[in-house]
Length: 353
Image (cartoon, rainbow, N blue to C red; front, top):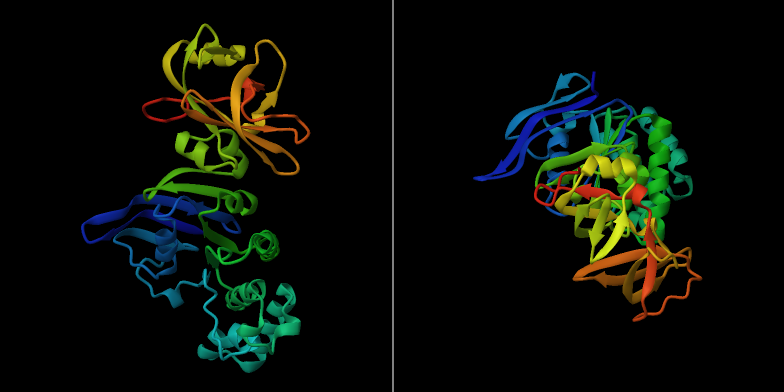
């Protein structure tokens, strides 16, 4: 039985439906990430699960119990917000234990749970400090600790790392994932950052316009995206896309031929119009006579590798190359495509072929 179930839930604001019927099942102990561009409905979905937004139609179940119309405090979920939402006049100790105090939990039990949360989160030296005397990462740990002591059925995270600097984001996403794995508590995490989603999730749900485009483990999303939207959203730098034709076992692109593996040639046949996708890391410099030629416009050294940006016809292209390779803007660059890693999408429906 799923631990969390959303059955045909919808959300409308007046005459505008922002979440069409949506179905989602989450297993116990799973770390599920909702990801998508701004306005895709991921935060609204999380808030409906938390009880902070009412469901227009449909049903929500947690651990087999229907909670669709229950108040937030009765759902046994704990939420970590983007802005921490700490009480500035309270110490770390008081912030973490406040919800239990309001619910009349015994003082000894509050102290025990606060001490355990502080130990897990490395907050023991800061228990008597006020939030203003903490770093951003420490404040986020306090917010997580406040959720942790409630011992909920489900953790809900609403873009909790978006206010942190890049280095701290990397550190905190690792800490959150390790903590969730240690506790085994089901977690639903919302982010617009696809790198965050890929590195943290057991399963990623990619959303667009209130709909689920694909739900799968990170590697499946990366290697077999269901459509062009998912292929474009997942991966950094983004996948290259070209409008091309397929003829006699080859992709015809900008007047150049790229031979297909036999199995793809047989599967795809001849097509007058197809969207061809290739990731930057599946393009390599080559002096081979059949290599693909384009003119670089810019070079972006990133240490471990270098990005070469150019154009094919009117389409921008990004190739990931060795940092020691001598590439000069304006001078032709030849690359080979690993066609075993190529992706093909219907030009009209954008569905994977």
